[in-house]
Length: 168
Image 1 (cartoon, helix red, strand yellow):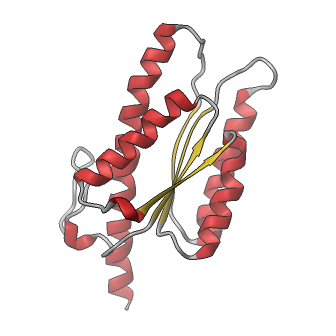
Image 2 (cartoon, rainbow, N blue to C red):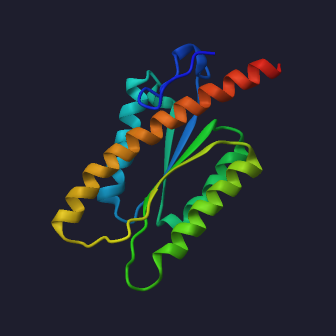
């Protein structure tokens, strides 16, 4: 089997499902930043020839709501993969590590329970402040993370298709 390097993770078009359906779940909290990630995901999918109508986005209030929606979407059988996007920051009211852990653990559980790959662009910066320097950094960083998660999604879908074909 032809292996694709991490720097060039997109599998060949022939190894991707014919028309994979992908759900993106995006937190509305820090929408101006999180939207950079979702835009980058869509742009990378387009570069890899995934038709725009194969991608559906669902917005939720915050990151904490993502795992339940991911579970419900996975159970519909309509999606080959789900990508979660959020920025979990310490807002001073609660420990953001608790929310981040709950979200990521929940996504992993959904992935394993429902047998639908789940990808995380849920970022949990140790320090985030509302000043322009941090906002500028995360605007750029979320583009990078969006591109990376889109490539990982397509690569895994390609690998799973190969496994499914071998098992058939």
